[in-house]
Image 1 (cartoon, rainbow, N blue to C red):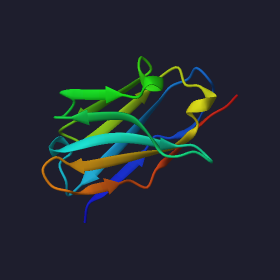
Image 2 (image 1 turned 90 degrees about the vertical axis):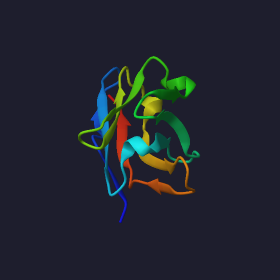
Image 3 (image 1 turned 180 degrees about the vertical axis):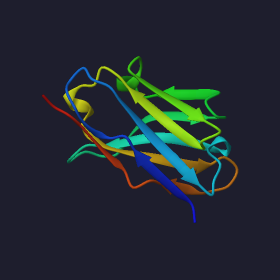
Image 4 (image 1 turned 135 degrees about the vertical axis):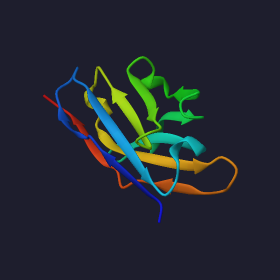
Length: 118
């Protein structure tokens, strides 16, 4: 059974950093389009960052450019989201997503809470 397990969320002060991890079982992250999404209370889920070809191609939401970095560790079958210069508006549940490149499959993790507050 495919599993995506996120970790690394928490409470940090504005200006701080967090690194989220998404470790996959069964599927190989380098064979999927791996993405991070987030959902704040009362808002729709939105795309944060996408990585294809193990980071060969990356794309970021405007709010993430220059502050967030998506990366892949093939040996650990894990995708990371490094988040710097965090702002209160970054507070949300962050979800990992894996989409098949050649097959119509879509997997989600359970989410990890990120709270930015002083």
